[in-house]
Length: 78
Image (tube, rainbow, N blue to C red; front, side, top):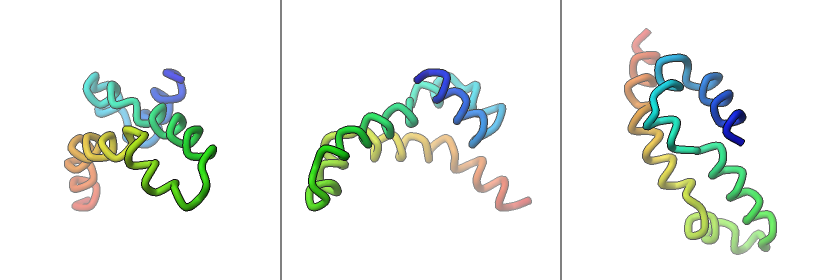
């Protein structure tokens, strides 16, 4: 799983941010895969609520955006 996480970070955010230890510690890819496995066991009706309560994905998105916002803003300028 760690190789998948590192590879996807390098692909999606590029070199400077993918090497940031704080960003790499987010484990967003692992959280999404684990959340997907949990949610696949539930009925569709319960998935939105269970996704927020049983996974770390919403918190990981918030933390990732803190790192990604400057890069997104810079790319929007260019």
